[in-house]
Length: 110
Image 1 (cartoon, rainbow, N blue to C red):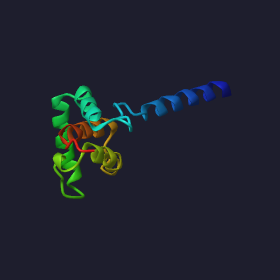
Image 2 (cartoon, rainbow, N blue to C red; image 1 turned 180 degrees about the vertical axis):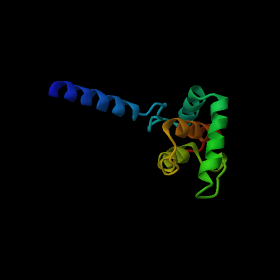
Image 3 (tube, one colour; image 1 turned 120 degrees about the vertical axis):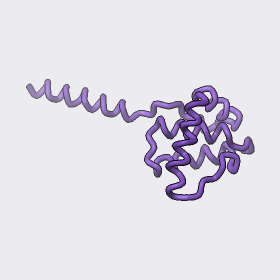
């Protein structure tokens, strides 16, 4: 009976841990700004980016002024967003759409 309980616990733990894994595409840290923009446009539709804009507007302005996407470079957004999406309590899907919207509309200066 203990083996069955142990096996069940392992299966349940494995399932829960797999649900915590990142589901969206993750940007390579060594990617160029053009590659990051291409990745965002390839992996997210215009509708998803528009949803990202809505999420960004509704969540981010709760704590600070909203900066236009063009006010920062692709590299700057890519560096800031992981920390900010955690603070905003966005799930991976929401964070991915926000990132895609901001990256796709950011300045191309590194």
